[in-house]
Length: 222
Figure 1 (cartoon, rainbow, N blue to C red):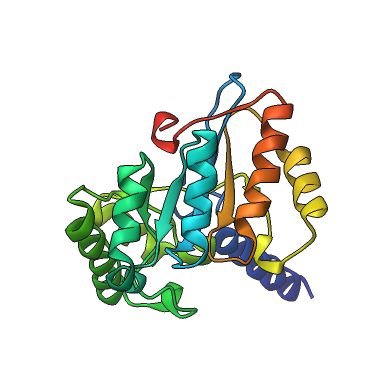
Figure 2 (spheres, helix red, strand yellow):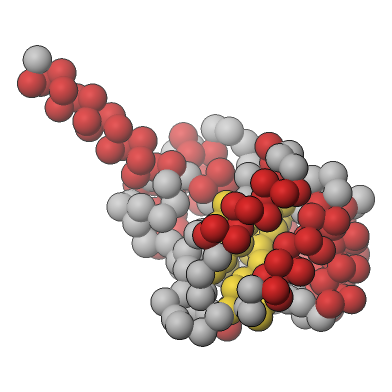
């Protein structure tokens, strides 16, 4: 009985360690700046999206807000001008893997390195900038991901506010979730591929401003 309980506890621990990007068990990930200053960073995953990303960029431009876009490598070739626009308008770009497949966390070290480097090279070819920020797909970490990140010299970035926007909850639920979790130094996770993500972003930026926060570029927190 004791052995069974220990096995269950071990399984729970391993799942927590892998699936909670803030656990810092396998890999120390930057998820929030330790500060008393009321600042926050906006980040987007899974782009660029030819429909929604331009809308997001327009909102950011109108409100003079910086953001960081963690891009999927295989989307780069068909969206090179969009990638350049992100850079030219003063935003950051990070590596979000080339494939972003569900099997990514199960890759061997060699295959994982090749995947990450493929994304890095695709982005660097278009941006002419070194890409060292990395966000693991699905926020999953494990020993292989940790080793690949260390070998390739990436800075892993997570979040402390997961909006769950991919589940397409109501804007009210997203805003309530952010308001409940907003703290000095927060990093907010959004996805620029989602329908009406630009409309949601407007509401989020209004909320952040109402709470007395300033949005800063992610690298100013590092």
